[in-house]
Image 1: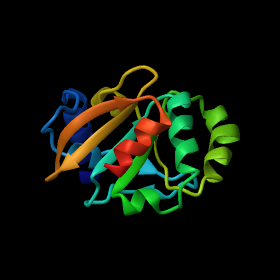
Image 2: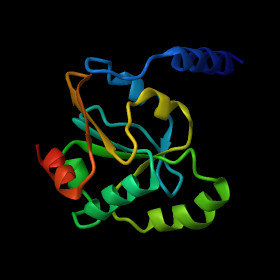
Image 3: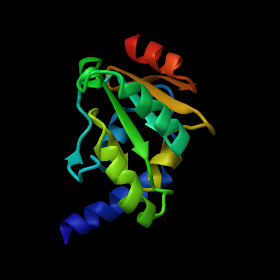
Image 4: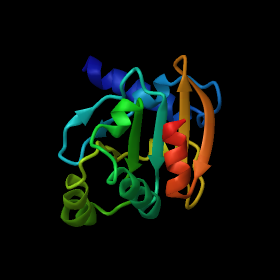
Length: 156
């Protein structure tokens, strides 16, 4: 009963929260549920310095194509994570096509199925959102649309 009440209160707070901005606390991102394509629950590591977020199929493909050319631990070594927000994808498509494809990638992908991430994390059509983290706060928000820009951001 207490867990349900806490969950409801926390959800109400998140619903009323404004979108992330520079100097927003990093902990907002930690409050969302993430899992791998294999269904394992994930938490964002405390040492994360860069969060890469894709909200569309094409931007997710861009990130996955680049990361697929790197070692499986590339993001981990760079204190970075990749979040794919797939809440708009129909469940049947997710189950039958997307998850089997995502499971083949060697890099770690944090999947988010809820609607709140998109309303909280700033995003632009056909762009990947980059959130730079420093001292547990969002220090910079930028948007990219090419693999070269992604590489530069991760290597920064």
